[in-house]
Length: 561
Image (cartoon, rainbow, N blue to C red; front, top):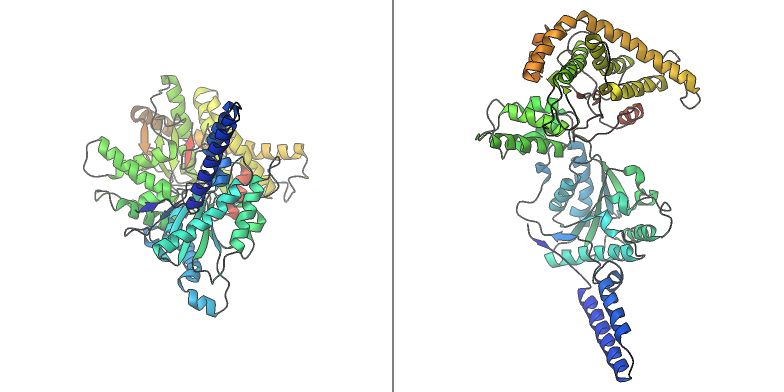
């Protein structure tokens, strides 16, 4: 890709520097001739030179006002919308908005004001930058990419000047390349365009966003170069309302986590350049990776190829991809190994989770492992059958059951519980609180803020106690099967879902019959919740409620100790 750094006003900056240097030398010679000590002057000149190499005085002189932005020509292998798997609705909405650039004459004849900004919002890794590059290629525009953090400095006025120069660079770069349009992609827009008035002490943040608003207001259809701003953020709630009003960012395009079909399309794109065996079932991989973004899926295929390379193989096999899914979700295997008695407790804990999960959702368990990964001593990975968006009371109760099953199994086998269940309890209580707040408890519909703490505590305690008794009954009926599965797990350290169901005689009598669509929250047992990226983050009941308002929710995919 041909990349050029463009610095308009560079001639003016050089001229100002030459004048300043010449004037400084003249003053130094004059003072020396008059018999003055010029050492303080030389010291001050050196200080000014040092500041000029930073974003301080240099920003005012134009010499250090670079934002790190680059202008890119359209290469022959540029990103197209066909290179982006899934995101059908987002691509359709974005392409429709880009018609304002590709059909300028028709737009002008209808008196339509120009489209000034498009905001891409969604979780990290969903392809917002790729979509911006595809938009530049689609409109045959020059593409400039910057980060919102590059505009923020401690010196007042520097950020505003950088915004002005950013638009100047975009127009000059388009003219140089013979293009009639330029697209400026601003990543981390919430840093540049956050709510004003929140940063007390200095007004640099407010001046910078004010300058951005002024520049966007100055865009018109009769300009020789049409400039379109494409912003990306995963913190839509932090943006200033003035940025979102009509006439600035006119379109808000939601780039969400891919569903199962979209994950399959993404996997096929990333698998094109990798030799894979005929037994690789990408549809099964797509089913097992609910909650993964496009970046996670790319990492899965890349890690699978690395595993094949380590073994000296020429092709990537299905087992490599499954291993890569575990690695992306949980992290790399670590060398720590618990004592034999601790390993036995971990095995019982994980099998408790797996048995209850399989009882409620037949066919859902994909892997049971006591191999240490990341911070987890063991884990159970479940495979959702279809994407879910809402939760019923029964489904939430079943999630509580799965969370409590690990500690109840430990108590049945060893007569006591371990500290590994602490996070299980916290998340079970969060789900119970969600049930109370959602009107799914015996209290009926209540206002959580108006409900006395004692009443809330009692309602939560009753839900958890009732579910704990139910889990104890389930495990007591299947203790012998759990014992057999424990011996196999300790011997092999990991058991695939089909093998686990074979050991248990394919349980299926306790759920609502057959394999049903299951909830998707990732709830680890005895540790922090594991997101597909491997980052630990608490999964509270409030977060579940928020996810219901979003298009996607995270899967009930992993329990870990």
